[in-house]
Length: 424
Image 1 (tube, rainbow, N blue to C red):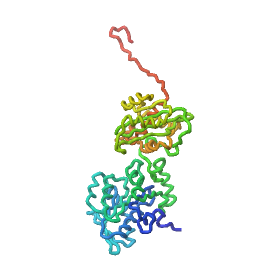
Image 2 (tube, rainbow, N blue to C red):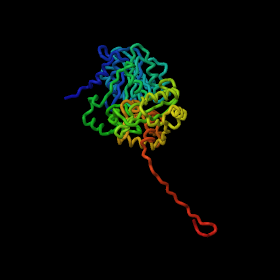
Image 3 (cartoon, rainbow, N blue to C red):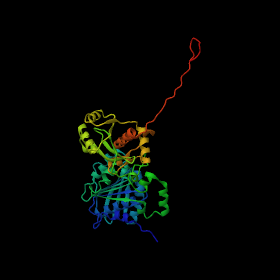
């Protein structure tokens, strides 16, 4: 039996802009998800059908990482399909212009490459009735924002297509997490949404990847895949706070311009749980907190519990002194980064520490905390999305690290005395 030409999700992409569709009121669409999931062709075909059905004599934008990749990945398959539907097309490569004609209607489609920050200037000044951005996550935000700003014709719509990147990517934060606020239809594709793939091909792709790469490329999830420090950590390891704990600590990574992160740790049956947290990003909130305000936040986090000690970033001298004067028992954190990461990894894997579901910023940073792989550096982490990671490491390194008894061995160089009386 022949498979259908389009899957239900592809048909939804093809029809979302048509009167009578439950998605007709949307002003934008984002299709993201797995590799080989059939989203690119459905998006390209729907974009052109919408443009030729709703407009005449207008200009549109089709954007990719480069013009060459756009022609190869989108236009090479799309143009023959349009020709079969009865459309005539003419390409003026010197102008990066594609002219489409159908039953007396003619529209112009300009092709752009969003390679880097300078690409935004190429698209300034033009007016579009709509724009399609293929692999939007590979383009700089300045280019994508400029392309969207060009769509000022009445009835214009925005079209985005991409594979997932990491959860800290600006596109994920702006267009995936805020899809409803932006009146955007977001559809996540998997390989099951591509009816042209056989079961054998799907199985082959599933065998190619594992871990976070499987989550991103096969499941279509926005997870950090390149150089994650805690790449073994999964959602299955997230716990629930115990009802009773017999000992409490607070760990703190202090920042003024950078975020401040505090974690409340409780021990139950020999396991330490990060049960709650405080996280404040002054850049996001567009204001800074004083040391006194942070001290109040720490007191609220403690919630009247007896805190054995507050483990604090050793560089936060003024905050340390304020906490001492307020009566807190304060310890300077052990800030050996590599040793701390190794110890934290061991504790997470063995279950000696558990991150609880209320610690959302800590869990978010677990996905974003990566090694700095630039210039081949393998022994340094990127100083981004690392504030809850630092306070967690402070706790493990300072409280849980087993004391190590060590000895030093040395050799004494034997020298002959000038007097010739022997050697010592």
